[in-house]
Image 1: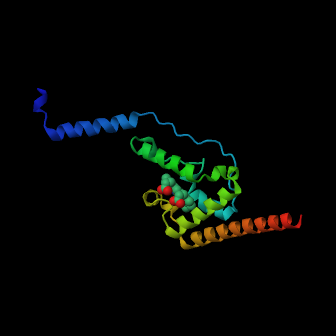
Image 2: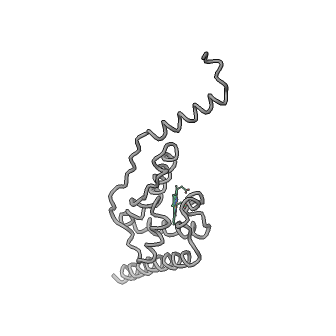
Image 3: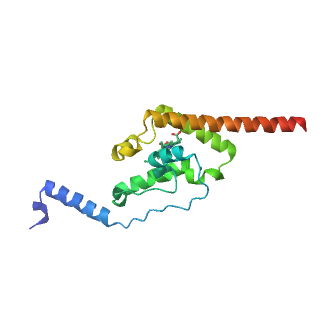
Length: 163
Ligand code: HEC
């Protein structure tokens, strides 16, 4: 059959089908780097963070099946890369104290604005949604960590003054 007789919808189908096959055959290896210093939150808090945040903000990502099919895989890979760059609970203890405070404040803000985890992820992972009691627990935990930092700073200052 001469090429020009192939109809447009057929050509579109062939191209889309071809892309899907190529996408699935791309060899994808996701990397979870070693955990160098986990945040070590109390168990209840850790459970919430692991359920709702760790897929993108730790080195303990559970890669779902769709993360192995291009082009979804690239999108997921990018999210995890950006997420880890902004905030990585697996490398928490390597952050400077001031950075930890800043990141805690960021977390507090995203919780207030309810924009984390991203809505599209919440749609795919219903277990990641945060209810009111999760939010309260997280906010109390953040407040107590910030308060502990403040009092540490305070006691350092008095030590310096008395010397
Ligand atoms: C599906 C992946 C994903 C999940 C799950 C996720 N995040 Fe994020 N997060 C991202 C990405 C990507 C960024 C960086 C880009 C941006 O800001 O949108 C980010 C950025 C952030 C930032 C820093 C930037 C800002 O917006 O202030 C904080 C704080 C944050 N996330 C907190 C959380 C918390 C807390 C959870 C769990 C309750 C969570 N995220 C769950 C993907 C995710």
